[in-house]
Image (tube, rainbow, N blue to C red; front, side, top):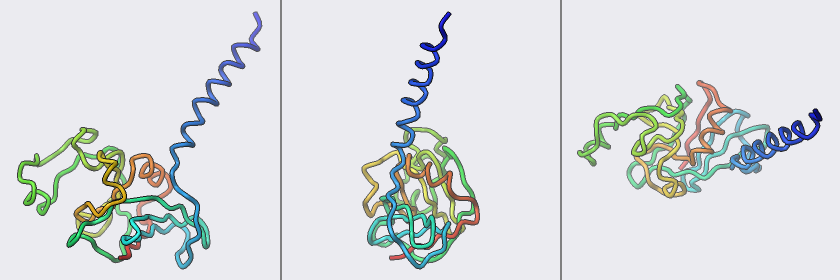
Length: 169
């Protein structure tokens, strides 16, 4: 039996299956100075998140940010990381949306946390995915930073608890 043909097919399938994985990476390499490698910088006015990869270089992602009266600025750090977390709406969200359940299970289509969450040590803020990709790029949240699910998963792989986060207006 000739194994060359089945092995060629296996390699072709393996490489064709691997190609879309790299296509999911949306971070655009750009110049950014003034921050140490490993820092997350959110520029609210630009609606962009930067992950500093090397001195003077960063990956840039589009994000949704806090709407009028809900945006914040300051320093924080990644406190914890979660994949497909359950979500308990904070008090101000429940006050504005009294029909929300007190707990939305992880992975549920109405769970606004999306694929992953990097919770911050500041209030109830987080960097997270979204089940509403049309909201990325807008002033839409109660202060959290929303990313496309594939982008937050990429960022999730690159950071650890303790990662510094700088949020600028």
